[in-house]
Each structure stands twice: as C-alpha cells, then as structure tokens.
Length: 270
Image 1 (cartoon, rainbow, N blue to C red):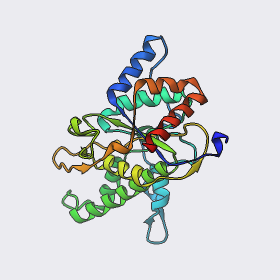
Image 2: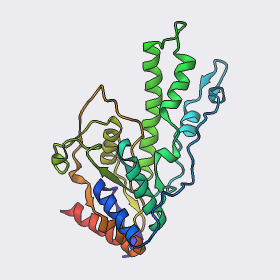
Image 3: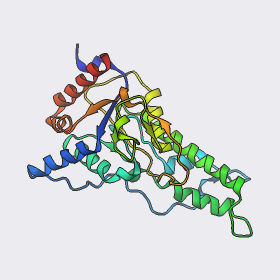
Image 4: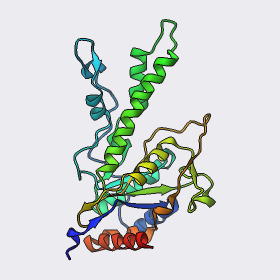
C-alpha cells in the first residue's frame, strides 16, 4: 500500500535541549551554516489603531478580526512543524527551527516570528478601556480584558496545533521542573502556556492521510510569573524521544522522514 494512503494519528515527539545543542555542534563541525534563518513572517512592532478593529454603532471590537491580525494561523498545511518550548529556551528553539527549515525543508511555526505580542496588545487595550482617572487600572476591567486576550491566544494555539500532524516538545529545566521526573507521569511544568499546549497536543489527535513527516510544535513566548507559581501535571510518556541522530537523518530526504514516522508507529504500538 502506498504510504500516502495510510491514515495516521497526531504524532508527538520530545527532545532534550542538550540534543539540539549536539545537533548544532555536529552541523557546524562539518562546515554547514547554522546561523538563524530569517522567517517569512516578521513580527510587527506597531499595532494598528484599535479603532481599525471596531464595528457597529457602539464601536464594539471585532474579536475575530483582531485575533486573526495578532495571532494568524494560516491555512491548513502552511506550517509543517509546531515546536513547543519555554520562553527561556527561545534561542535553542530558533536553532532547531533553523535546522528543520533549512536542511529538512519543513515550514516551522514559531510564535515569536509569526505572532505579535499578547502583552503589547493587552497593554494597548488596558490603557484605553481600563485606566481610571487616578491613573490606576480598574481591577475588574483588567481581569475582563485579560480573559479576552488569553481566550484569543488559546484559540489560536488550538487552531495552529489542529492544523499540524505532529509536534516536537523541547524538554529542559525551564519547561519541565524536576528533571528526574521528565520521563514519568509525575513530571510537572510551572508554565500555564506549556501546560495548555501539552493538553491540546494530548487531546486533539486527528486522523489524517498524508506522506512524509508534515509537522512538529512551539509555546507562547510570554515570560512565566516568578511570584505566582502553579504546577501542572505533564505526563510526557506518550511523546516519543528524539535525539540529535534522529534529526540529522531527517535531512536525507523523504525516505528519512518516513523512517522517523515508522519509529513513531513502533513507539505507539509498544
């Protein structure tokens, strides 16, 4: 049966951050370029006026239009790879994305390159709608505005994950606390965004037809609070472990990608 006729489930991979560094070292050692690539999209530094997103007599903000502008997810199949990672591991995520895009010809989704800042948008809305005459923000209005922006962000994350076939989660001391528990069902993360992406990757499996390795994963680059710390269970045992050798083999072409998928099939059947 041709590979393209096979039906697959959503594939989940994980890789230790040190394996990415081994990969970069190996590529540089043979004299190949690993300078960070310039992605097609560039994150705009200036938002359009909020008036652009209002509609109707009451000047209600068009949430769908605003979400599509700030957190665009593109059409189905536009991105092959979704990389999930801690904001503190951004440099390593960029190097992994660079390798996958430059040498494996996979389109990579990194929110820092595609999405505008949720914090920047929230500040703009709060300054306009939540500021009191005394120069302080109204607590209840701030909660409401934050809920709206985080809901938009969550829906965008779900949409981009749902449009891909598989993901790569970068494991590190930043993303998973207590490294000794990383490969057990006791692992935990302190990042609400990593927890959200993890939950979506676990609960949004899709049956698809396709050939080759189409995609992987990335977390929202919003720095975690160091004052409020909440731990979420993140059982990563259903994510197949990748190492630098697996990634190196991927630049060998279509057959190499199929071999990696075969490894995932075997992992799933164990």
